[in-house]
Image (cartoon, rainbow, N blue to C red):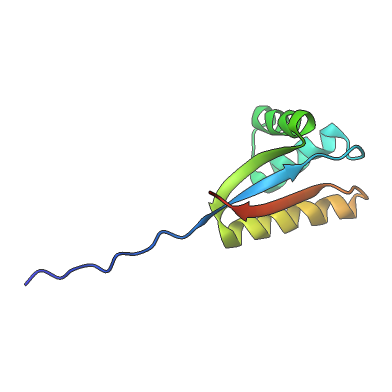
Length: 93
């Protein structure tokens, strides 16, 4: 008799959002995106400019624990440097 696999619910994905502010230098934002989110210079610049223009930008979509860890890591890096750079995590719709 064939075994039926239980339907595994795919874990909900979470978005990490970069929130624009008027204090954090663009170069620093790009540096954080490259360091924490392993983005290329080009991708990091694109995300930073999107946040600059729109107020927020999606940085990454991944599992919740990774999203929260990366977000905190990025915020802590900014805090240490004295910048109010903010990242938020929210469920992907």
